[in-house]
Length: 426
Image (tube, rainbow, N blue to C red; front, side, top):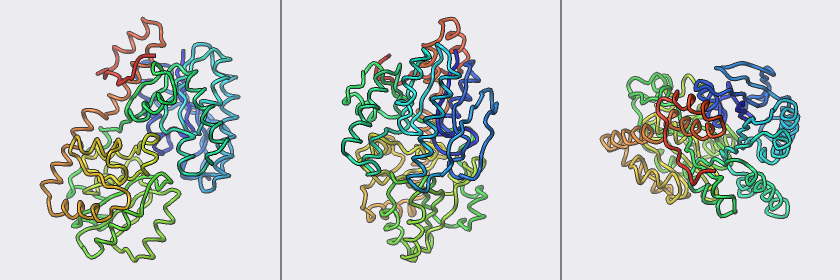
């Protein structure tokens, strides 16, 4: 029996879902599973680069499918990339999957579980869905798909594919509860939180961070945003807070990354003359700890209607870096609740730039409080969101599908098998 992880991007791509899925694949291989990856030949941020069709990496065989390569800049191009991946994935499954295999199907491209459900059944293989995000809900809330018959059909088909799966793994409790309300069988739902690499991302003192020096931020109090400038995120509140604080020479905003809204954010910065904002491109993996460590406090944003459907993965890297979070979104949502319960940041509502600026000013004037929040953030990470904990939960889940002797041997290899946070057992 082999484990196949299907996601449009895998190692060496640096997108959020690629890092998460690759982390799980490599860990499962180290723990004795036979693991393969099913992905595309593309990089998420560079449509001109192509990877080889097959590669062995860290004990897993990565199969890269031929797809179109229009990239993410236009919806029609992205749609064609999705469609060609779906088509190639079906052909690959029919040719290569064997009876008893387990396919962990991710949510990039959207609705991949719908496409692969029947081919996997035909091959007498089993499907486990890893719901990084929920589609079509995200597309419906962002008006990428209209809330008419097409949306209803997409929802019905997605729900059908989840009901036929062995297990559906959500990253947050809110998502699992939402799926219960959609009559996905409670026994098929599990919650395994996302994680980050706490060995690679560790707190770096300000005076030891090379990027702070290189970027001329040595003496400033830095408010950072790192990651995707996507449709699910909100930047007007951040820019308004920066405008309120533009007179403060000792406070700088640092925005790192790219994506759909990056150009609009840059245009607004120029229009308002926000010289207190520094823009940098997405940094390579080997600089991730330093780039996250540049900021004294990090910004995370999420549009409130998307709360049950998306969890910003950047949050776990911020916790690993030992930095407080200022969350712009629903203060009563998943991240807002975590920040309040564990005292590692603050949440403000969309549009409340005055409160956001107030929190920044308070932290600028209270270095002891920043140290306290930072320590709480890293402590929370080490308790709940380490790579070992998340992968151990997956090890336990997938071991159920192995012969008992093999499962016992694999579980014994896990250094510390964390109890899976499940709604119930499938």
